[in-house]
Image 1: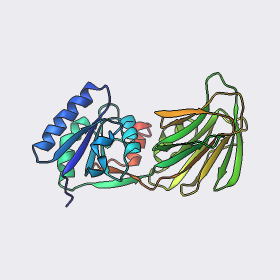
Image 2: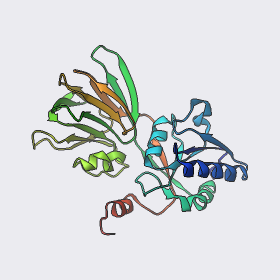
Image 3: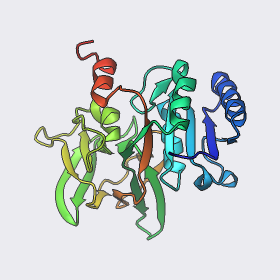
Image 4: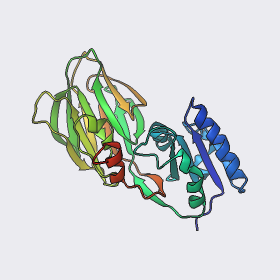
Length: 276
């Protein structure tokens, strides 16, 4: 049976409902002799999340994304959606306490989801590092013209894209921007990366799926245009001519707590209105 001694509780920023629920959950856990740690969504280093046995995330998919990126260890994460049904959050607010009873009793499973490590190498040799759960998007600004990107996989050149940009998505992120751009929906447990061009100039440039143990490399080959790298829609930076973005599966995975009978395909039918 799983033992829970220390549980982190993370609430969506600037959400009165999430903050109130976090206080209630903390009191509920402490009445059961479980240490509960209220933490910022960015996971303050002082809270030592590596010592937690479980993380409860109160908010939505965006809050869960930021928590998953910040975690340095494969700690089970229970996502509680306080808004519309998301693809990542496991339960709604009304299911919270019955679910916690099940989880504390050890009656749950975990589903592994991949993360990607991102290295941005500037043309001057300096480097920046990011981690993503959904996607990395390399795209032009609203006023920029079409941009040119060279894609390589495991050192082999694949294509040169003249387009509005490129989406590099995990299977989890396949139902986000990738889907809107015409990319495929991928079962979130598959060990792959999805590469989807944004409005390519050449119609034959289509999305491609590659193994996630391969290194994906994208070089910006356009000068004098505003181009940005955005991570999970939450952080990012401006790119310059000949900057290189490299991505590869991270050594640590996200462990999502599963207690409901709602499957990924149930979520697709409900969220995308596929017959329900």
